[in-house]
Image (cartoon, rainbow, N blue to C red):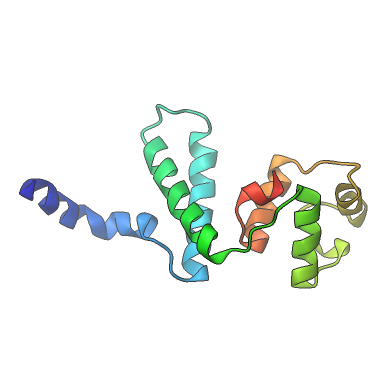
Length: 133
């Protein structure tokens, strides 16, 4: 066990940059950005060498969200509308989703959010992707 602790002491300075529990919004946003990169790299490959890191970081991000990010219940359209209202954003001010017309169609239930839009909105508003799924 002592040997394992010595290894952890050596490895922690590097690992702590991606595995520390976020205590500030900026730290949370960094963790989410890194998690997004891991998801892009790993995808559904459970045998990828970083798959357990992705799983662990997902848990860290989820715990932060449970304590610090308002939970939006209901469907993704209502969540998007609530976040827009909360941040004072109009449909024209969401270029990461598309044109004002596209945003309108999403809010009115005529179109669903795609994966790219969900990731972009998650980053923009600092919420988990689950808010839009």
